[in-house]
Image (cartoon, rainbow, N blue to C red):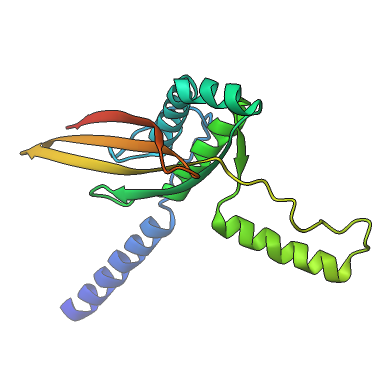
Length: 197
């Protein structure tokens, strides 16, 4: 009799666990994409966007831009190179690079060209067009826009913790270099400090 009661209790407990697990739905709330939500204290999309916008704004206000425009009588062409992640956590630097490119392009002050990977894909498409498209509509070879400057950088972090409190410090450094002369024309940094309790 006790064995039968134990089996029935076990079955009831098992079904209760299954029912609870299946019925455990999470509530999802859609928010504005610009809303600042920082759940973990890690580098997030808000940090990426704000740092990119602030750094690009600083870069475009410095003397190199006016000097170039006076000497060349045109807007400079910029390519965004690598931004290395040397922080303690995984940071999607591709997303950060896209935020930088967006801020550069939206400024209207400089021209932007694709990186090496993008150019390679475009060249393959151009080759296909020259073989399969009509002569009038095929993209021409030798019309690419060469970059005058390359923007590169890194993201670093320092973590300080004591018991349940933690301070995370991020520093993003970017450098703009003249591709012809290797002269660095701008160096900027942005710091973020987060206290996590």
